[in-house]
Length: 441
Image (tube, rainbow, N blue to C red):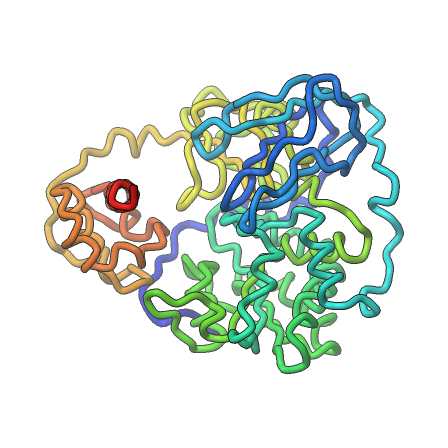
């Protein structure tokens, strides 16, 4: 089994839903579809109150190079266009859509599959762009941009990320089992954009042996290699995945295409297949609903804009001990202040947690044990970064490699003093960014 060379941890996996097939959640009576579901500039709303739309119809246009289209997730009437709570913890311009119950596709969308091999590179990327596809592993970078690296950057390695190393999450695992043909074909489409020189891999952690077997049977005849990865967090981080599979190291200031690599998520590959072959915009995704405090943990297919409160009701409602709900996984997800936030293109999971034990833990002085240094996958000294962040020493903290921190949470997890190391590092990044913006102004 392959793995990255520096750091890493192995928290309890808690994959309670790994054997539960994906369920299609009914479309709720009202959807809240944000214009901000991706990195970059939010989409520009194209509808107004009273507008009637069909499923898949464009309701938000990409507003700039780093932006992505947004589509109606069902058919119905626009009830409002206004700022509403977003899983990021902020407010975002959102289209409120009242469903008409017909779930009727706009003409020409979600058609019978066609052969993509007759399409040009420009046509494939154009379909991906029109469909509003973004990285579905969490970052949300517009996929059409990622598939168009600078001409001087030659991609020779395309990797699908099937690690899903966050505890609890099993959405990608189920997708690899239940839609393995679409996963493989999506990867073929992506790899074809870089010519015959591009070697294709799928990296899957060893705790998903059934997925490794299912993909291997279909991938081998097509020249795609399925790599068994050691079960270790953060195996699915882009830099760590590249290092594990190719041995290449992404240095400070470099991007994957600088080392000839391109990484996409399993869900993104399926979305690419559906966009290119079926002309289907990204209007739904697989979400793991789990945690010890939810009545019926599930893997569900939910349309974009479904509120977490509706999902909670569909999954048996949270237990009385729930005191925290997280969007994403427990290591890198965000705690929510309300359940009135919607599923977006990057929502991989919803966790219902009782963290009273953590809340009662008292943060103590650093004892210089070095555990955070030992587990940091970027080879940093998190204890020192946090100390300097508390002192607000902008110049010193950048010399310590602040920008290289991926905020994976490994350091906070192992700290015996219960220091909120990632919190302080995020705080420092915000201060540095604000300082740079003021200088530019």
